[in-house]
Image (cartoon, rainbow, N blue to C red; front, side):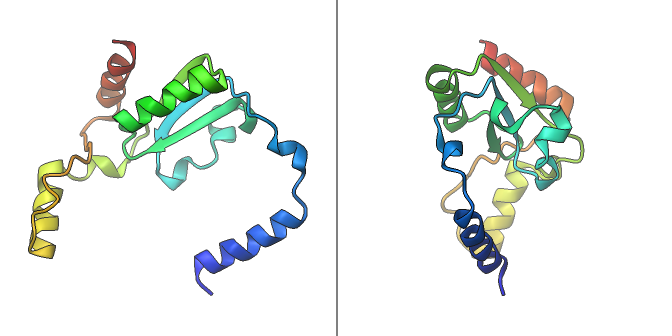
Length: 139
C-alpha cells in the first residue's frame, strides 16, 4: 500500500469521528512562516503554541515570495493574526545547493533548460537569511 493510500484510509477513519465544531472560522493569533522541512512538523512543541493560535505558511527555505506575501495579507487582514514569526532552522536543505547549480543540474538531466532559470531561493546562512526576510516584511 502506498503512503497516499494509507493517508486516504486514515482520512476515511478521521472523517467518521470528525467534530463539526472544529470547522468554525479560524482565529489564529500569529502567522508562522516556516520551512517545508518535515522536521518542523511539530510546531506546537517547538513553539509552545496551540494549533489554533497559528496560521502556518510553509515554503522552501522559508522564502518570502509574492505568494507568501499574499498569504500573509490574508492572514493579517482576513483571519486577524497580529504577529508574524519567521522560523528558519539549521540544517536546511536550501543551504546545500545554489539556484545556479540546481538550474544547471536540471538542464543537464532533462536536456532542456526550460523553464529556466528558475528561482529556488537557496541561501547559505540561516541567521543572515532570517534577517533578510525580516527586512522584506518590515520595509
